[in-house]
Image (cartoon, rainbow, N blue to C red; front, side, top):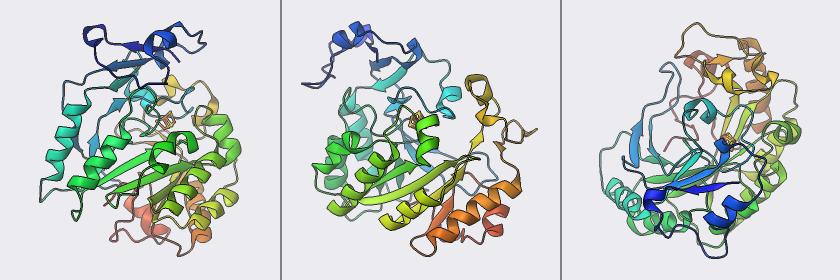
Length: 329
Ligand code: SF4
């Protein structure tokens, strides 16, 4: 992967000892396109901002977003990833390295009361752990939450398709009650096909198991469920993990994602006329996918649906009031 540092801020000590530096990485022969190169630079706008989820007719809770990066460090990017259409205009994966400003803002957020959400999601605009070797951040985040959020409802949500390598930093640290680690998993063949840059599913599961054993709070996402693959095995693995929450999601796409997806994966989705809505599988298909998952998970833990509408939640018998979403507090 190519790494490019913003020349204006090239004096920033942002590459850890023992990890590839920007020069050597720049020299690496890479078959990836420029779109995948990493641009390390300071962020000038706010790091912590409320995100009101869209489309508005979905059940998803609002949450705060931690904009530590715009993009993802896993190459190739997942076939269906919405970041392709969100950040199509960027000249690479932008990773923000002015950590002191970021941590100061987070400390300020933790001191606030009466917030509309107490979840700070570090996985909405990026995989939470995929940039660790280029810009170590997680240990600092854990320390801030350990020191400042103890006894408060403020929670950092880390969302990842990483495995043991990416979770290593967490495995070395004592768990923190104010941090939840959410692993996104899939059918292993679907993952090998459509999530080829991320850790294997077994690796992700093993990382989740080890973190759970150490006492970390673990949430799981089976998302996106893709037509043509069987989800019985992975759902049973997730059940055996006994996470604190599980979210099920089916493949979906914003109206402009198709321009950036080279495979036919989105063809089975029903297009929507409303540009603010999502293209999805037909309702009957989704209901079966959700019911199959819910039946296997049983009463192991609260279960939610990602970016689904009220009628679908009701139809499959899930409890909206208990706010069981991965992104919820
Ligand atoms: S791991 Fe997540 S953020 Fe990264 S490419 Fe895949 S879906 Fe996108």
